[in-house]
Length: 281
Image 1: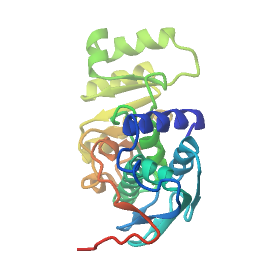
Image 2: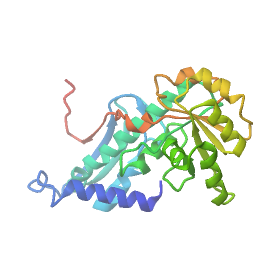
Image 3: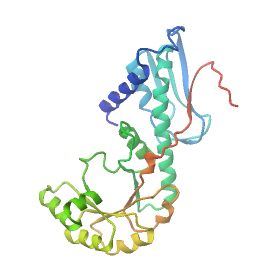
Image 4: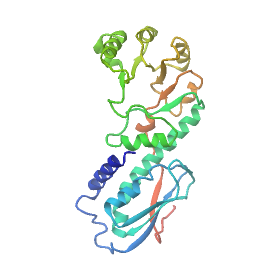
């Protein structure tokens, strides 16, 4: 992750959470030195080990040690990080740090499961821009940590012509001609197709990538035969962890899965200072 963007984002989130100060901690011995541990409560893949050191550097007076690296598969009850510092820093930074690490670890874990379900090394699993506003930096890093690939980070990451663009231009062929006439040689062009005729038009004009939108695996496999190997194929639309196995062997170069980042189940991680007792029931 870009360390400058990362620092700015974590600072923004800390400001939001702290407000005018931590009222819960201010009347307690906040200068006391404590040691705390981040502990996973369910099996999964760890992601977000860059978050605690940035948060504690911003708050001051605490040192974090990662006990496992991002991308490590862990089991319930395992300690993944240790921090030593003042009570004020540890308690104030707890929620923001946990929120991000839990979400990122959940995305990484889901991505790994999705790739496992696909079981096809010839097809890359990618994310989309369907991320929560403000969290794209973290979400996309988590997808990579889980073994997936990043699609565009933003609208400058390449040209992708979808249904509304095609309607505006007057058709697939017209949209491609207009765009390719203006673009330089280093900017790839992807276009969405929903019919066989649109596919043939996209091939004729010379798209770099063609997205087969909302097509079943059999159709993807059939249409792939109509496309030169020099043109990449993306299967997209309604593909999830539960359905991706049907696309094994379909011939696509990659498949985009929006719900990697827009339907997230955070990995359960807790933070406990030494001596604290957490009830298990």
